[in-house]
Amino acid sequence: MTATHARRRASLAALLPAHRADAILVTSVVNVRYLTGLASSNAAVLVRADADATLATDSRYIEAARRVCADVEVIEASDVAGALLPENGRTGIEADHMSVADYFRLGGGLPRLSGLVESVRTVKDDAEIDLIRTACELTGRAFDEVVPGLRPGLTEKEVARALERRMVELGADGLAFDSIVASGPNGAIPHHSPSDRPLERGDLVTMDFGALYRGYHADMTRTVAIGEPAGWQRELYDLVRAAQRAGSLAARVGAALHEVDAAARDLIGEAGYGEFFKHGLGHGVGLQIHEAPFLSPARPENPQDSRGEREGSPKPERSSRAPERDHEHARLEDRVPVTVEPGVYLPGRGGVRIEDTLVVRDGGPELLTRTTKELLVL
Picture 1 (cartoon, rainbow, N blue to C red):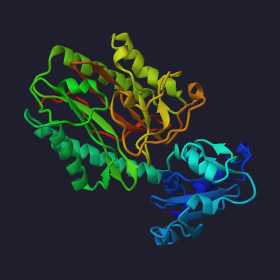
Picture 2: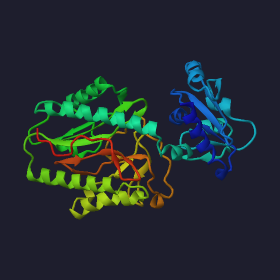
Picture 3: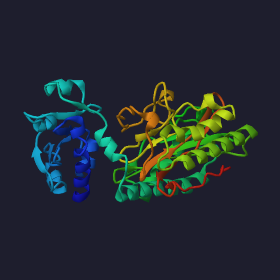
Picture 4: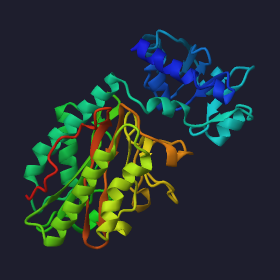
């Protein structure tokens, strides 16, 4: 993978002159992994305008770094940022990832660069897409094997643990994020944490979960019915499914991000449920579960990730998310994996969310989460 990492560093280096920087000090460990291949909890890499690079990490990871990162200079240090900061030249820092305390400890006055590595990460290479595809396949298989066993009396926690256990048994390295299982009235909470509430006949049950595979994430949501659904439940499901399909078909090369969001949002609004769809339509996925690009309205008052973080607890390993300064004009590119996940949440009654991970392609979207979106009645 050294050639791949070298190409990524070259792409990053090519952005530096426009920001009047001679180098960039990358301190996000996710971005360090992307640029060098080293997975760690303490590392930084200095990438210069000529694409030459130096990696610093501490004694716990130094041998792995020397083995994995044979094409860069590797130094051992506990203060990885301080060890790499050159005395001369204009070295930018990742403003989205460095703390204020570290910024001033390093002397302050450094050019504050935002989202440069993330902009390179947005378009995935074939190897990355293959890893996301595998993560999605493991996620879908777990759903197909676990969901037929859902029945009244099982708790939300038990359903979540069963899905998570099966993903790992099938080959996942872990969980892409903390699973959501929301039954009955809990389905009105987009970020509901699984509870001891037992499933009941007449419930809609929303499951949002994903596998982690070799550092890459899957993300899928399905809603099922326990027993024959009421008329309003089936109507709501059919609406969200239609919106999800419209959003997926709109996710094409060259499409404006806010227009993709509108393709789904307008359907929900026209049906009279617009106020109950409060989060963005989707987000990029890769080394992080939430990364650029973000499919949301053109001028969100308070941008959130697509699971509506105002509604519940945050996810682990969230992207710091560089600001999308020109969101209204941002467009999808080829080989960009995104989620499409509209939802309608009715307080006190329940909700429906349906989500796929897909890859934007020149010839149309490639669906990675392939399990059925028919309403399963269990």
